[in-house]
Image (cartoon, rainbow, N blue to C red; front, side, top):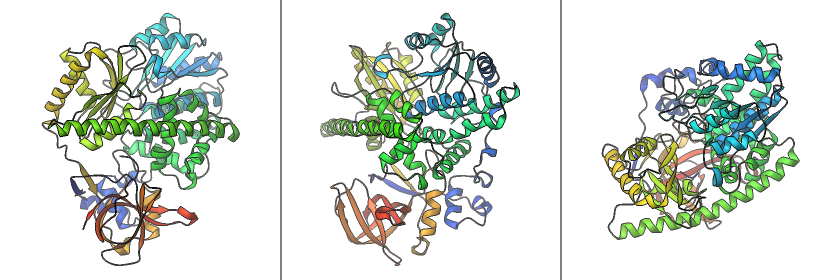
Amino acid sequence: MAEGAVTRVLRIRRREVPEPLYRAMPATLDPVLRRVYAARDAQPAQLAATLSGLLPVGSLGGMEAATGALVAARRRQAPVLVAGDYDADGATATALLVSALRGMGFGHVDYLVPDRFELGYGFSPGVADLAAARGPALIITVDNGVTSVEGVARAAALGIDVIVTDHHLPGSELPAARALINPNLPGEAFPSKALCGVGVAFYLAAALAKALDGAGLGSYAQLRAPVLDALDLVALGTVADLVPLDANNRILVGEGLRRIRAGRLRPGLAALFAVAGRDPAVARSADLGFAIAPRLNAAGRLDVMSLGIDCLLAPDAQRARVLAARLDELNAERRGLQRRMQSQAEELLDRLAGAGQEAGTCLFDPGWHEGIVGLVAARLKERTGRPVVAFAPGGEPGTLKGSARSVDGVHVRDVLAAVATRNVAPGLRFGGHAMAAGLRLPAAELPAFAAAWEAELARVLAGVDTDRVLWSDGSLAAGEMTVELAEQLHFAGPWGQGFPEPMFDDAFSVLDQRVLKDAHLRLSLRHAQGGDPVDAIAFNHVAALPARVHCCYRFGISDFGGRRRRQLVVEHVQSA
């Protein structure tokens, strides 16, 4: 869901609050926060969210082989190349390892991120050839590689060792890498399967600091410093990749946000906050997900992600500002393309509905941009309540590139795997995880693929409730709507995928309403129980409201106009 966009929902449901867990929460917590945490099954011991609570770095398989190869490379100052990916997770993971290795005394560290429009996703043989031209002795893949059997084999044939770090689900065959680190490998005992690419890179860097210390190649305090300095990147990449914020990921994001708020963020990230008009001192996960990540992702969608990585690696504020300004321009271009494609997709859905057909979940337009189809699929998924795959022309003639987005209860990669077993589209290539996947398909096979996709979805969705539901944490009494609670909710969490930001629902009187920038509705509301008026905003909503409404809303703070005050962000509204 776009930040603040008012949703059209079929049902509002209130979360259950387990009474024993509520009572076990610290008595010092505000009662509202106690019930919010209990409703998310957060254990009291997890609320501190400090690095000491992280799962041990040595408990992730493959670390000993990986750090052994890196220690050997450090001893002889062998050149190391980081092979990245073109989304925010891949960009932050690439920047993390490049900066950490340099900070640990590696003298020759370079990176390569492929042009998605020419070479597609993953460490392919073509990428291996490009990497080899840089002369590395060792390659580390980040956020990709677990399915790159041929690419790793090509690197080996060229005499280059490869360490694969990834979090995506593996295929039937694993690459013959020097080391393979992935929490989702078969038989991997690491408890957190939600670690994303930058999280895996962080674990490798942390383990390497210990290994280099043990090898007498530096003091642990010095070696650990660049790893801790990268927590701002870990927070950004983890939120951007929409992985579940389990207890381990909440520690990583929470620590990163604390550093950002304290001003300990790299120049590139500070510059991105500035062009987005966000204040790092009050940063929260929503700022990372809705303001910073889209600007970083714009480089990979419309240009090459090296622009974004260079911004994250910028050595000073001046260079960072130049790169952030270019990313902001690309993001504005991306928004324009997305609006056009979204409008075309919705018109197509309306025509299907008008003809009495089932809402399509496999769409293609020859004028669409392959870097934007994932965003279109995400918006259509919200509208239809069903998984959606959207295709655009690929870089090669006769080839389509697609992006799939799913709903809770439907593992989209498993759906694609089932389609592949039907063998009706033998040219299908795909990869991803439960909620998102990327595809490549010969254009001639699109009709057969679409039929198999719809058939498999019909089978899977037969046992899934696809009604759109907005989950509420219940009512906030008028007396609970204090600035103090608003600030606590703002800085609590961290909120994100699988650990959603609190939402409440109540009845209000509408005291005043006016349209801002022809796009949003600025409101003054009074709680049905009375009390002082409270400011509210309904983003992407311009229709006038009746005198009495029932709202689902987020309760937080706003510093609009330079004054911090409580504010409701309305997510859904209906007549009371």
